[in-house]
Length: 231
Image (cartoon, rainbow, N blue to C red):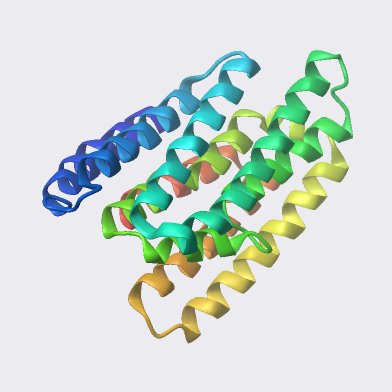
C-alpha cells in the first residue's frame, strides 16, 4: 500500500515539476532531485533488512537537501540540514544498537526520535517551514512523500516500539504536542502554504498518535489519505 502511494505521488509530481520548472536554471536538476526523493522513499517502504532501510532513509535525506538547496537556497536548506541529519544520526544509532543485540528501550527511543524529526513535529517543524521558500513541486514531494517517511518507519518498526513502554509513551506525548501545535499554528497563519505546512505537522502528529496506540491499520490509512490530499 505504501509503495503504491509513493509511486502514485511520483507519477503526478515529477511530470508536473518538469513542466512547472521549465526555464528555471535549476529546473532539470531539481526535477531529478524530486525523482530521487520519491524513489528512495519508495525503497524505504519495501526495505527488509535494517541496513537497507537505513540506506534508503539517508539517500532520501540527501535528495531532499539537494532539492531544498536548489529550490529555496540557504533559507530552505539550513533548517533541513540540521533536523534531517539529526534524524539520520538517530536512525543509524538505533540500527547499530540492534546489530549489537541491544533491542531494548534505547533502540526503540532512537527510532521514535528519527521518525518525529522526519515528520517535522516540534521542535523540528522549522525544517518544513523552511521549505516554503522552495517551489510548489518541492512542497508536493515533501508533504506527500518525505515527511511520510517517519510514519513508514514507525509502522514498519511498530513491534519493536510497542515492546517498549517508554518509547510508546514518548511517541504518544510527542505526537500529541505536534497535533496541538500544528492545529493551533494552522489557524493563525495567513499564507496558504504556511497553513498547509502546519496542517501537515498536525496530521503527522495524529497519525503517529494512532501508531503509538497500536492502531497500525488506522495509521496506515491516515498516512495514505494525507499523502494523496497534500500532494
